[in-house]
Image (cartoon, rainbow, N blue to C red; front, top):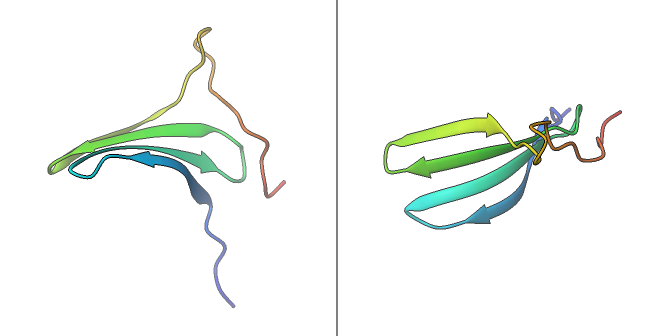
Length: 60
């Protein structure tokens, strides 16, 4: 039985420098991932009010 993946990549741009948006399928929270060379970072994606961007959760 295959294990269900919790995160789904919704957006990607770039090759050497990449920016991606990942969604937690259980909570719906969107995360911004940015990588350049050997470094990278992940943070919740926030709206203009500073609240996390939440998509409709898939596995509720």
